[in-house]
Structures are given as C-alpha cells and as structure tokens.
Length: 104
Image (cartoon, rainbow, N blue to C red; front, side, top):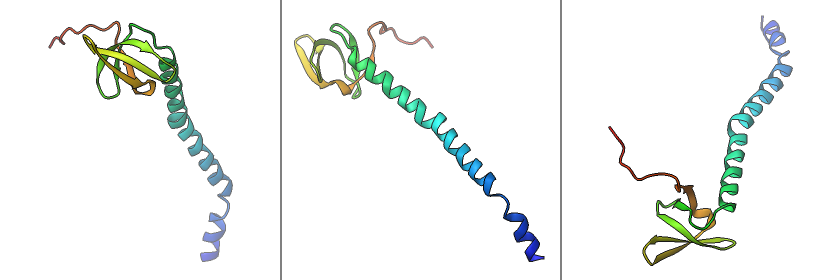
C-alpha cells in the first residue's frame, strides 16, 4: 500500500518546475515591471523640470521653481523665501491645478 502511494507522487517534478516558473513570471509582470516603469517616469519628470513650474516636494512643501541646477532645485515658497532641494525630493507638478475647494 505504501509503495503505490510513493510511486504515484514521484512523477510531479515537471509540474513543480512549471509552477515555480509561473510564479516567477507573475511576480515579474505584476510587481517588478510596473515599479521599473514608475521609476522611469519619475526620473524623466525630474529631468524635465523647468523654471516657473509649480511643484510639491515629497515633504509636502508647495512652491514655484526659480532656479535649476544639475542636482538641485531652488523653489520659492513665499515672497522672497527660497528653499533649495535635491531634484529627487520633487514629487508632483501642480502647475495646471487650481486651489478651489472640493464640492461636497
């Protein structure tokens, strides 16, 4: 009785390899690839920043870009108040958005 159980269970090696490859493929297409795409879009966004753009930093500070350098951005947050940030700290472009309150 025990011999027949072990003989029947021994033939699934090919199926296990297939399932492992399927899990790796699913993980790649649903986790790694979308993250790479988001990173590329964010890198392109930061490379194409321009003076006059209204932005939000990752810390939530709103301001307008007044000076661009290779690795840093200077933004004006109030009249005559300027802050210097790394380009990697810029999160969003809000140039075309309005500050109207949401209707409920």
